[in-house]
Amino acid sequence: MAQCLKQSNRRHGQKRTRGLTQLRGRWNIICNVVPKFVGCYTHVVQRRKSKSSNEDIKDFLFGVYSSSSNSETPTSYAHDSTTSTVHPIGKKSTKRKNKEKHAKSSTKDAQFIALQQQHKERMSKMDELVKARNEQNKVEEMKIIQLKDHEMLCNMIREKYNTS
Image (cartoon, rainbow, N blue to C red; front, side):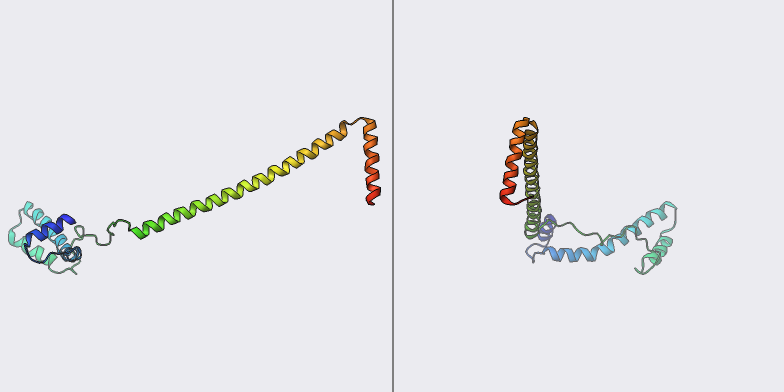
């Protein structure tokens, strides 16, 4: 597009330079006429191949292309103005997208930290269970005399604190 601007400005010499919006406006005017010309030209070429006279070709094509509301006008050559032009991303939208990416990654970090805490809690509970099982195994491995002594001490503690 920049080359078109330069060429247009060179052709007009010292006259006022045209901006991008002026050229777009001019293109919108031209792009409605050019497809009709291309369609008309292809019809002329086809009719000449069929050896029609120039007057017959002119009369036929004048009837087809004289008004834009004519239903016989082919639209296969028409410029598609519904397609959007691709524009580069601006600074503000780039910043916004970067912030969104950062926010997403920070939530992932928070989720990861929460999972780590849950894992630590589970591991501490597992350690407590292992210690309790070890104590239970120690009691089972006691000799009969040690077991009686242990039972007697437990009974004394229960009596002291009035627990049944």
